[in-house]
Length: 134
Image (tube, rainbow, N blue to C red):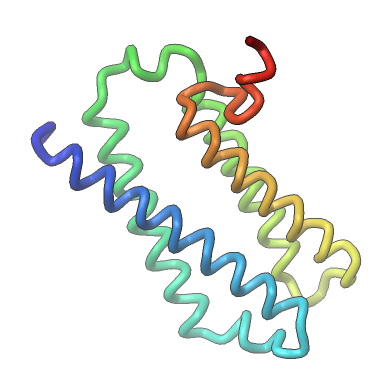
């Protein structure tokens, strides 16, 4: 199965980009006068489908790679941030939340998303901040 690693990684990266783009789109819609479009069923289901592909590809990569790759804790950091990202995203897109809180959570979720991407690219728990150590 390792021979499919490049294809699985490509699917995973594409799903990360599409998922982040959909969240950005839904968040911008939710904070505009088109808020109902952010909660429109086809948009939500597309987001769920992309996130399912993303999670599936991530689990496939996890099973393919040797455990030594994850020795420095970057994957654990990403998983903790993923839980935070999901929680912030839920509040940011929830219509019942106060507008100011939704905006703060939306911006915070985007920052967490960016940090997760930087951690994945650096393969280090500090992500973009690893350069501050040297």
